[in-house]
Length: 226
Image (cartoon, rainbow, N blue to C red):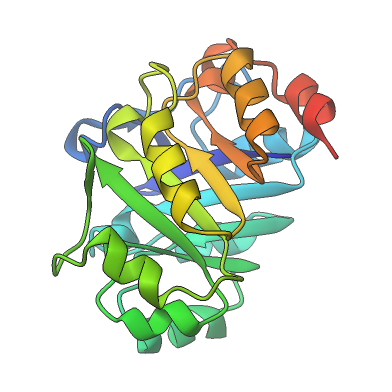
């Protein structure tokens, strides 16, 4: 199982948030380093053994600019949510060669044809509801989904809370698809990771637990490496 640390970037700095309330996100404070510089945080992730980093460009997602120059400077394998809404935006982002894999989140998805592309699809939920700008339902999306596309089940309302993974949500989606599954939002402790492993989940996105020191990034990467 892959342990993938999360790097949220807004206005040029690494930030931490709670429950998806982005207007109140603050500069990241982490036990890993004394900096909220995204490049320094990413370097520390790598030193701790992270093979991949999940990056959310919150400015791009909210259509308030982007942090692509910073992201391009981050070394190693990068998975990027850059707020893609259409195939044209996907092609433009790929042309920049700033990441290895593009995430398309339902929060910004406006064209279901993107579900035929080589992407990772993030099923973005908040307070139990699928986020969709034009009210796609979960069923509509899953019906169109290529079975080879990896899925992230992201409970935005649990981000930064460490209140535990929304297991009902994870189980609901897993019953409907055979796609590789990643989980993010609310990871509490080692028990959550062990349960994900036992369920056959491909990977876990984690931020708050490693920044607070509740979970040791190097240790959990080594423990769950296949």
